[in-house]
Length: 134
Image 1 (cartoon, rainbow, N blue to C red):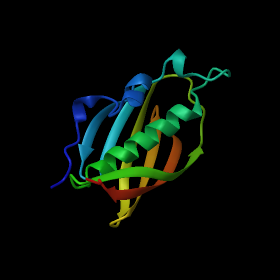
Image 2 (tube, helix red, strand yellow):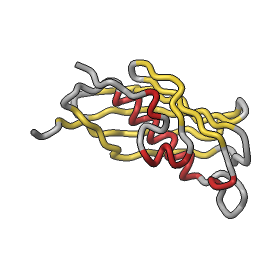
Image 3 (cartoon, rainbow, N blue to C red):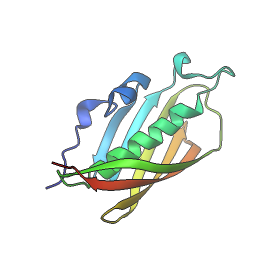
């Protein structure tokens, strides 16, 4: 039986909620989340901290994979590669994530982060899938 993803849980975890991450769509193997850029999320150069974008991708990936896991399974990030294309100073970010491969023990996801209809970052992540020990 698949896990139930709590779409109304905002950021899906306390850290996601801390940075203002909200999930707006969830389908099997897919998530969309949004974040409003504010001054508390900027780096010393007055642009969005890259860690915020990374966190959107990581959380979106976890949510997309979570939607495909059985009740007895969990997942954890093994690695994420992210490429930043454009600095973000304001506005809303949208992160769309898709599971592009899933086996019994490994999954690979792809995230695109958009700001004002422009691609600002792209990430690929590999996650471990494991059984919950009873």
